[in-house]
Image (cartoon, rainbow, N blue to C red):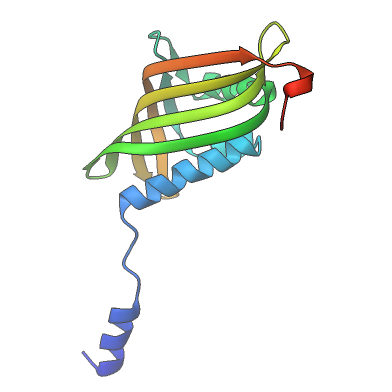
Length: 158
């Protein structure tokens, strides 16, 4: 190897690790949710995406898209949203990721009232490596806790 080739090899960045790429995808998801960008969220899903809810119900990609669209429409403001990877297992072209998601938002409930909701959920997510990068194949809700406090227009802060 010539000295120029050695210097180039030493200066080239290694390929990002799958965990870093998936963490970045979660950050994209958070930004898209805050910006109410449904297309950007759905772009993270595989065509055969499945969302398993805590009650045992299972939604396919189209049903998930409709549910997320409803959630986005009901959300008036996001005070805080975070995803923490608690466990990461790489299995070749697939990653099983256990996360904790926290969302604090002001939403309009089904009765039309504004509420400040704090939602903490744990998930077992499955990501697959595709030509377009890492994509969600499965999001399985393991636990879900939601606290809601009705807010008036007087104390509602964006």
